[in-house]
Image 1 (cartoon, rainbow, N blue to C red):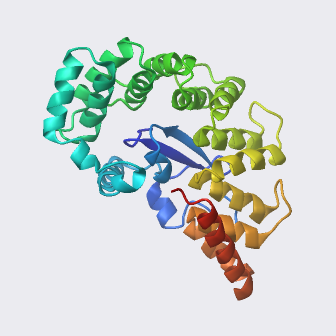
Image 2 (image 1 turned 60 degrees about the vertical axis):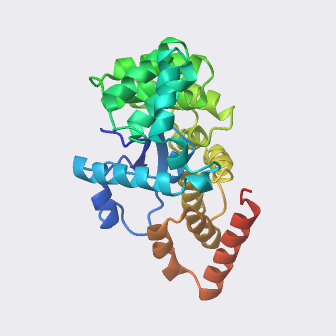
Length: 313
């Protein structure tokens, strides 16, 4: 499996995994079947807003370009100055000087610039070079990024074992993203002996820091009884914690739980609300024939009220 620039979400229901083309065409899932998803890798706050699915290389290249474009266009809404202004060629030259002098933070940031092709020509090999220099100094986020490059085979020969090594180094420092990613490796058995128990352990460590992706993954483990006793109640709890942070995958999973009556009393209006918050359009479409206009209006109002209450300044 290849990875997109920042993260990948598996779409999973009963062991089914499919391409984005199948998903768009409605070929992957039957109508009215609740879809439970688990998040996979995540490297930044922004990537939680960009779900993507397995597909062919051409589709993934298009999605990667779209992700970079959206990141640049909406950087102001992500809590900072314009990303373009922050990463001009002049600033990259300054970063380069600091990085060559051994500044670990400049090395890690320079790796990001080369990875994304912002302020410098895109180069996975240059990204790896600067991530490695920062990682060799023990910077956890650089270790995690280097692990992702090994996992996806970008700028280096693909190696799950090396990915696990670098994820573990960052995870042992308490870096939540790496803890989640290491959990994914244990869950899937890539680079390590497959172990749901170890996966749960690392997901839980990341959830202790409030990491929404890991909370969703832990909920998925409870949904399927992997490494923990099966518990829809516990799954609902973890999906809800991630959903309240604005994580769309978890919000969609809450919709699926209400639609199927798992862990909570069945409530299609509440299911519609969570699907609307997550913008899960296909699930919304499948529910609408089973709801009255009044119920749909009520669900939309609840969704709007929730968004206003959780709107970030």
